[in-house]
Length: 120
Image (tube, rainbow, N blue to C red):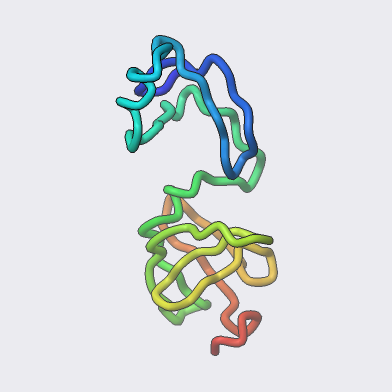
C-alpha cells in the first residue's frame, strides 16, 4: 500500500498501535526524520468498506438530529474501549443501531435517538 511517505512494506502490531516499515527509509536517521509526520493513504488504495461502514472523517461536519430536533454537528469520531462514538457538543453518541437511526452522508445528516441515550 502506498502512502505519502512511501510504500508500506511490512505491518505488525495491533490496529490500535500499528508498526509499519516504509520502503526507502532504511536508516535510523531517515526514520527519525518522519517522526510526527502524518501517515496518509490515498482512498483509492484503502481496503473496501463493508455495507454500512464509513470512514471516520466522513462523519465530521454532519448535522445531527433527533427527528426534527437539531442536536448539533459532529466534531470528531471518538474511539472508546467498546464502541466508536460521535462527538456532538458535550454528547458522545455511540455508533450502535439503538442510538443511531440513520446516516445519510450525501445529505450530511445523522438521525439519532436521544431517548435511548437518556439525553432528552
